[in-house]
Amino acid sequence: MSRFTDKYIAAFMADLLARNPGETEFHQAVSEVLTSVAPCLEAYPHLLDSKIMERMVEPERVIIFRVPWMDDAGEIHINRGFRVQMNSAIGPYKGGIRFHPSVNLSVMKFLAFEQTFKNALTTLPMGGAKGGSDFNPRGKSDAEVMRFCQSFMTELQRHIGQDTDVPAGDIGVGGREIGYLFGQYKRLRDEFTGTLTGKGFAWGGSLLRPEATGFGVCYFAQQMLATRGESFEGKTVVVSGAGNVAQFAAAKAMRLGAKVVTLSDSDGFVFDPDGLDEEKFAYVQQLKNVARGRIKEYAAKYPTAKYYPGERPWGIKCDIALPCATQNELDAEGARKLVENGCICVTEGANMPTTPEAIAIIQGAKLLYSPGKASNAGGVATSGLEMTQNSIRQKWTSEEVDAQLHRIMTDIHEACIKYGTEEDGYVNYVKGANTAGFLKVAGAMMDQGLV
Ligand code: NDP
Ligand code: 2IT
Image 1: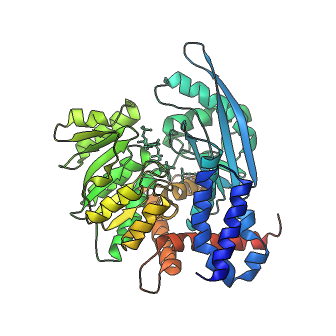
Image 2: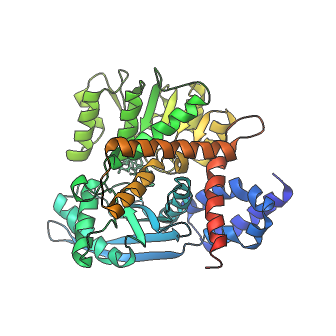
Image 3: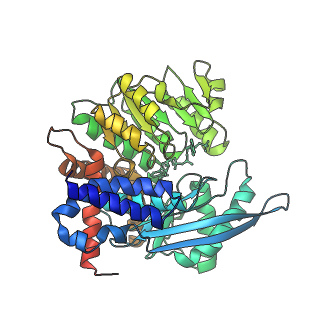
């Protein structure tokens, strides 16, 4: 990197830290993108002079609101709600809603920032946003979750709309929550529109949206592996998480001929040396989505599996790792273990699951490595397809949706190759994804003037 670029990055980050104190996740996400795109800014001085990056890191709007609700025992609780509307240069704001106790402004801003570039990569017209609450759905009854969702939407509804901002699910927000949120939105606004995605199939949802993120992760990994003449066939795969993304990434990897040996949650992981099969997958779906149980119960049901409380799965020998739980779950120690054990490919399902130190180790060892904004974009892309189906009031078959999902993941992979191939032939997917996404958003912002 040139001296100019180094100085620019240092000055930019010093200002960002001063203006956004304590927002460590947001700093981390910006630093990664900035490092990737700084050479572009040097090459295209009009982007630098237009302060395009300075504009991109300032959300267009941040909404923070009180969410009061009453539990089943009659006790009152107050949570904090967020919606960060980061960038609308290429379409209405779009991005998920997360319910998790770790949600704060920094997490919301990092996710909305990442979403802006991810959505640009899908080639669909969607801006970037993220929302959520520090509400913890764990252990809450259906009635409590419903009352919380209704209170959350009572405020959020005035800030969203099918041409303004279209939320969807994320951690802690799945089909059940989208149903309650949609019901309250419809009641308050008296309109049946596609303002939320991830809806039930009977009321406007798209086939394959539940599967799309995890399936897309595997389609992207297939493309990465193919660059080295490899495939999932016969490979051992380590998956973290046990939620929406992890379940369908694991299922697709298994159906592509791999042996999936781990799943996890925030309490620990299970290692099943025999690997997942369709019957075990159905059990996991029942356990996590219906019974809302913990992953350790898998080891009780299948005695060949072992539960490791308080640990992450990266020490298990594998060929392919799919981090699908949460941010910063794969650290330097985990990355070293993966490299030592001969892993060849790390494809992110979660948003920013790998720490900067771990990325340096993985890329330094020349493993295939893709950032979530490229490899998990199949979820939001299929949300975009749901919006299209809502607009034209039609339903596509799962084959049609799957074909489009395949095409979009292939296009994203090609963009990464185009912008990320280094002199020695190594594909730096981080640089490729950030540069492709950035150039598209920057171009649209330039066209639309100083707004
Ligand atoms: P879910 O709520 O369905 O599942 C989340 C999983 O991650 C659970 O197993 C959960 O375990 C675990 N987890 C959550 N927080 C932590 C933590 N702090 N430490 C360890 N494990 C944790 O969420 P999703 O599967 O939808 O989301 C997973 C990731 O994928 C997130 O990073 C999300 O932003 C990203 N993503 C999701 C998309 C979607 O369409 N849903 C699209 C693109 C990206 P526990 O039960 O213990 O909390
Ligand atoms: O991180 C993500 O891309 C999501 N949670 C999905 C967002 C969406 O609008 O489908």
